[in-house]
Image (cartoon, rainbow, N blue to C red; front, top):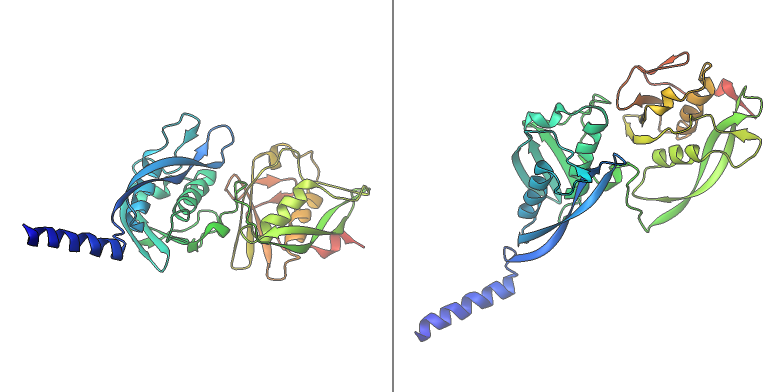
Length: 303
């Protein structure tokens, strides 16, 4: 009997010193679902009672994303019949291999699905980035046609981004219409930027606010929402809501388009801008058809 007690004590001591990461503990995990009223991602707190192993926690989070929320105010972001084929974590990168059903979503739903996975998994201790594959093949963005690659919270640039306390002052070059609506004029603006939000997203957000000078005016249609901003290989993909087209007042649209393009192309590394409407190319806007990236136009700018 004494020997049995000794063995039990030794096991308990070993577990205590080793940390026993598989011990069960009740905590909560933020699962990102789509809020019905706003079509934006929002965290829903879900109770988790299981081991503190990172893979187990990630599997639990993904299972919740697939099954969907219990609350009526939210909707799931992953397509029906999506399954997890494999999941492993190495060097804080969660490698998730989904079934082909994962790619059945298009437009905004595709982005929300992808971003909900990244935001959810990156909230789990031990995961800072996510790499998504589909049936063993790297995920391809429907908008850009390129591999999505490894993503972190910083790459998720929807309006629900969490504000980071690490900020810095940046001077932006923004282009707005002159009072006669014939040209664009640059307005220099100092802003506080967070390292979780890209400079491209910041530029678009500041354009939406309009100019500081009363001599200039915004030319972006009222009601336009920024759905996503993503840069790949020197091209910035700006995904806007349908209001950008449906609430356009008419005309050539040249000032509106180049207000966006010239402002973004003030970033030296950018070569052009691809405008998407609800995640799709090819929308008509005045004399423009958004089927190819648009380069900056210095001729439309006045001093």
